Image (cartoon, rainbow, N blue to C red):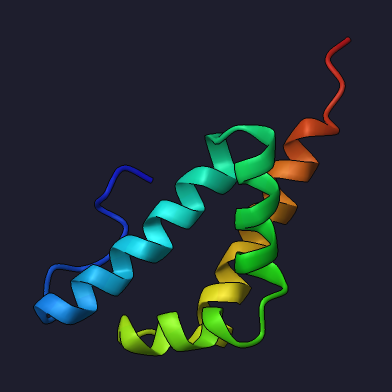
Length: 84
């Protein structure tokens, strides 16, 4: 994700919150171990801040998590592919 994760049709406030989610996804995918763990908790387990941030970003928290679970599953399956 390169800062272009979300559509540009959002208000300034929504764009700010979208940047928070984008940053968390970036930390989850390529941050240091501590940042990855914090971001993973926020993205997959947090039941207070994550839904708030998603709604403030104009996004459905359940849809965002479904997408993240799909990305996670795809990443795990790619990591488990063995090359002969």
